[in-house]
Length: 394
Image (cartoon, rainbow, N blue to C red; front, side, top):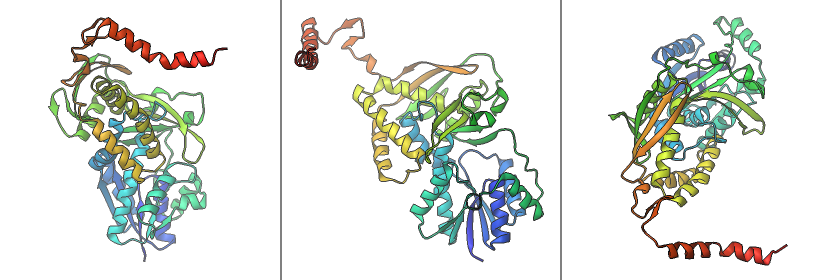
């Protein structure tokens, strides 16, 4: 029997793959799940039990939360990355780390085959296949759902035929949870005009009071919440637990998929949206005009390339080096107020705050130059447009 590693989530598609590839194709199937922040202890146990019931030879759950943070999430924070100014790349960012961990596991056990349950209509097939092909071109990729064009009902009937009669009723909403946010899909998101209803979101409003929270950044990373230090990943979890009680961070993203069609997905990402806005506010106080200017377009490129599955291109390491360098002075406290369904950035406090310069106060007083200096500067600054207007008079 040939060894095959299956990217296993416990859902219908990957459950079909586990049974089909072991019972029909005779593979020695090794199921692997990669935890990037989406599994509870109880869920991991249930997924493992289901995997063995489906006939896998072994099952492994890889904890990659810290890896996900240090390899991807921190650069999304450094870059204030929101795809189309909306989406913090919650799920798409996870898939890259999951694919890398799975292919590393396949190499470790000497597997010649690797499989996943993606269909032929989404982004994940591209992300998984590209990572697998780049890192292990000699390992063959098998994708039964995509290749056989199976419907959900066909998968259920096959499993029942082989004695697997689990409750496969499709929930009304598809939820994918991770460290950097939760995606929500439903019948409304395949339309262009319907919003997701309140009950579609996994976190419901629990608090109606207002509260204030202090976020402490050190070189761009969130190191403390209300002066309590913890790991960066744990701080994200803690802020998410707090802000989700206010039903903060809900939205619907519409964007272009890798395969060229439009896609619409709901999400809730309280911690990511607060962290990005708080971090960006701190940056606007401590970075120069040109640092901020260049960061905008480079960060946009980083987010786009990550979304498109191009994580392994060396340009990503180049952009990461720039983003890391830009965080040298991004240290200080950001004060945030939380309210039902919204938050506000109240202000910042930092030793690196460029508003503290003695040269002048915007709109008030100039201490570092004279009135004549200002007049001369303005005159020279206008030269280019003076010339243009003179040459191109209509």
